[in-house]
Image (cartoon, rainbow, N blue to C red):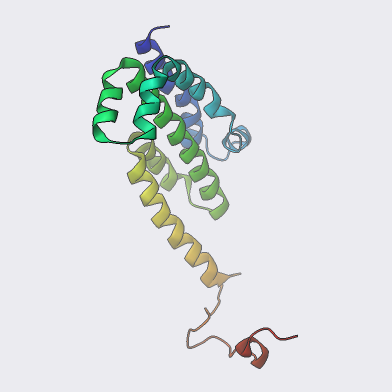
Length: 171
């Protein structure tokens, strides 16, 4: 296979899994697939096919990171392809994690769909936005249990700490 074919194949192998996460949330098979590391394996195989032929240049770029080394690596078709496949695999890993977290926290699929699309395209922005939403949802879950507001430690409406708790743990 040519470098160009492998480059194109990296995303083609990940795209069906992204489609499940975005278009079929809550489907039993989507949940099972999202919980598995296996969707990344074909993309990582493409990474290996691209990385092995340029391994000396790849190793030089990652063992002594510098802009010039990465620029040299990216000039090689296999080097750029290997970095691309690595990014695709990592993005899929992040997308699967975001999907599972969102399901656990009850974040609506209409919120997650566009967020996962953003993550496919610009993963740092998608992940940062998700982390903000996740923090807000987790905070809201901590503040309410069973529809009742639960006072947080140190808030004016929190119950006073017992003497044992205030003094620390004693035997």
